[in-house]
Length: 90
Image 1 (cartoon, helix red, strand yellow):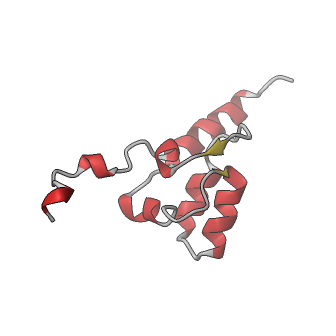
Image 2 (cartoon, helix red, strand yellow):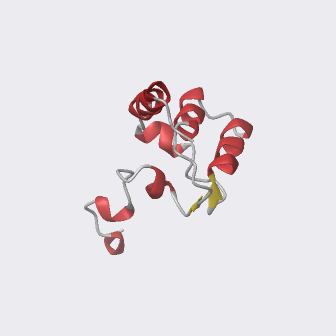
């Protein structure tokens, strides 16, 4: 099966349209991890996440794998290590 140039360009355009912000990614923080792409889309719709979250998830190339956390979807999502405070002091 040959992939047409048009389909390839449309796939690349869809990937370029995907963007994450801290606010958008926060809608997936409480998702039932690990989860597949379809499970995350279903979770986003059921919890009333903005349309941009669903569109971003739909634009991920689906290989059937499950994701263990938001960091696998958006590697720039901040973790506890990104903050510069010492939890023992508080």
